[in-house]
Length: 130
Image (cartoon, rainbow, N blue to C red; front, side, top):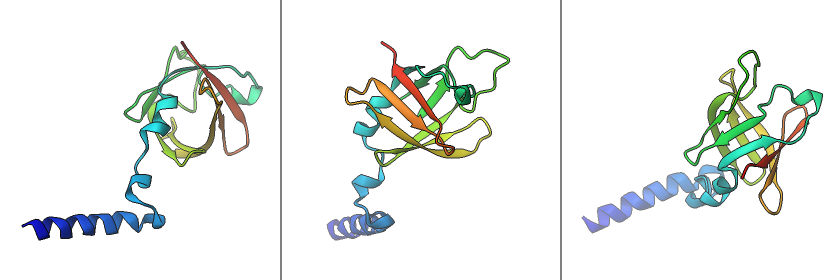
C-alpha cells in the first residue's frame, strides 16, 4: 500500500513537472502573486484609449473580478470574469466577449499602483482603494 502511494505521487509529480520543465509548485498560482491584486482598484489614468476599461475594479482571491459602479450605457472590455497570473509580469483576463486575453502587469514597489498593458501597448493605471 505504501509503495503504491509513492508510485502514484511520483507519477503525478512527473506529469506536472514536465509542463515546461517547471516544478509543480511553480505551475500553480502563488498566493504571493494573488495577494497584491486582491481588493478594489480605481483607475488613475485617463487617456482616451482607456475609455473601454472600467473606472473601478474588484479582484477577489478566488480568481474572479468585476467592474464596480458601471454606468449602464458604457461598454467595458472587462465587466465580470476571471483572472489568472502567468508569471510575475503577465495576467490572463476574461473579457466581455468571453475571449481570454494576456496583458502585461506591473505593480509599484508598495503594491498600491498597478499598471496593465494591453496588446496595443495602451497602459491603464489603477491605484488601490483604501
